[in-house]
Length: 186
Image 1 (cartoon, helix red, strand yellow):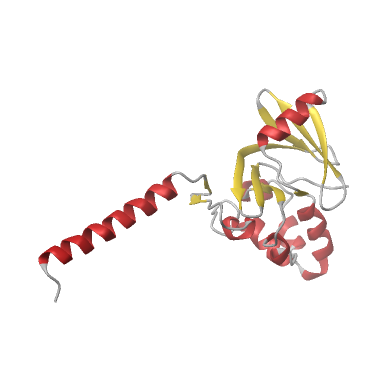
Image 2 (tube, helix red, strand yellow):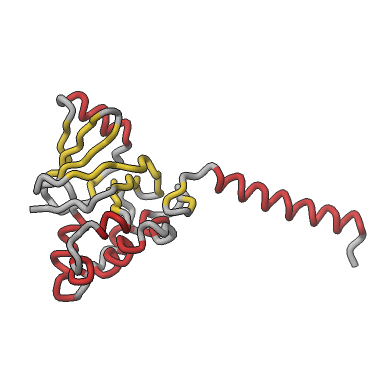
């Protein structure tokens, strides 16, 4: 049987552990209402974001989970559910069908760049090149990064633009930047 002192000590230890856990989580960036842990992979963190359920489902349908859980490092420009909702009606439902896996994979890998590119690095690179810099995606096509009015913008191969809405969400295997529009390769 525990003494009163042991019970108080145990209760204090549990309370301090909870405070420490919530304090650590409070200092982490939130994406889709979920804390993003720097010791988790891109997929592990994205799976907890309520704003990225469509992206996670698409990554699973394309068979890219193991790749994005891999060592990397990767920079992922992660479209939100709202970004996918901007696509013409039925586009997402059609892309996740097995017969369209190649098209889905092409689109998703267009959102991934090898290496860890922070917002600060992307801004500096863009400024050094007259406000724009070009990255080569894992898919193989160019993606233009633009620095405008202190914000990062992306322009895809088709001329579509996406604004980076959340920067530098560090992961164990790279970094995520949240974007408001799905990028399209040629």
